[in-house]
Amino acid sequence: MPDNAAGEAGYGHLQRRRAALRGHLAMLVFSALVAGSFSFGALVARDIAPVTLMALRFVLGAAMIAAIFAATGRLRALRLARPARFLLLGGIFAAYFLTMFEALRVAGPVPLAAIFTLTPLMTAVTARAILGQRTGALNWLALAIGAAGALWVIFRADLSALLALRLGWGEKLFIFGSFLHALYVPLLRRFNQGEGPLASTFGVLVGGALVLLAWGWGDIRATDWAGLPIRVWLVLAYLMVFATVTTFSLVQYGAMRLPASKVMAYTYLTPSFVIGWEVALGHGVPPVAVLAGVGLTLVALMILLGRDERPPQPSDASAR
Image 1 (cartoon, rainbow, N blue to C red):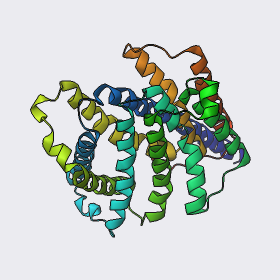
Image 2 (image 1 turned 180 degrees about the vertical axis):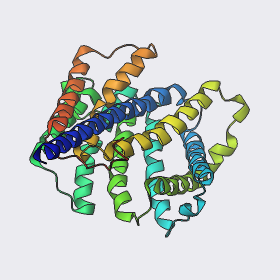
Image 3 (image 1 turned 45 degrees about the horizontal axis):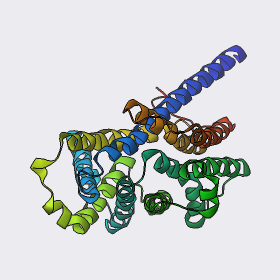
Image 4 (image 1 turned 60 degrees about the vertical axis):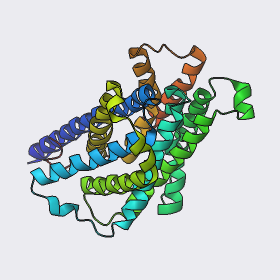
């Protein structure tokens, strides 16, 4: 009996390790796909009004989720209670993406990706205010190191610009957008009334689509749809399939197998993956001094990943 118990415990530990490894792999892919949003978004930032692109993304994303529920006979699950809350959540999320694509018109993908790594720090603050969540001392250390690296990249390794807080308009706009993202995360949890993750995402996308259609109807009507370059449609497909539905699924998969702090840690990989995308697209490599800031964000990642926390215990089905 003791041998059997030890064997079962060892097998269970091995299963959890494998599940955790799959969770880490999912979050690696998640970070790479999110980074692609910055690089590919920059390619079409001047071809189409951001509000038009985002309206299409939200409408088509909601339609894709509705089709999934219809195909599985679960359309009734999309009848969400108190739909007004999704106007607020969707509006905040839509505003985040609008600031991102407006900023990409005048700022580079790498500095904006560095700004995105500030969202864990901002989220720790907003989650404390909205949900009362506390952040441990080691997490604060990692967040501070990551923020320092992000600032070094944002100011392009120019110490005088950092001390004078000289920021371009695009960077200032996306800092505000990143704060909206940090506000969205705890509000989504606060307003949740037991909906499943995919149903909640549907509500957010519908709410955001309504806000975007109302806000940008003039730009949408004025768009020369027939004259749009093919790259706009390719980027839209990437945003809808990979940067929306796929990334959402990956983060849900990772969250079921890894502690929350480890899921959050992968945000710090975004600048590195953006640099990879930029090199692949033939846009060159940032200066070595800027890469030092990226190195600090990787240090923050290592601290958070190195924490010895007990991961969520997946069921037999979810561990497979």
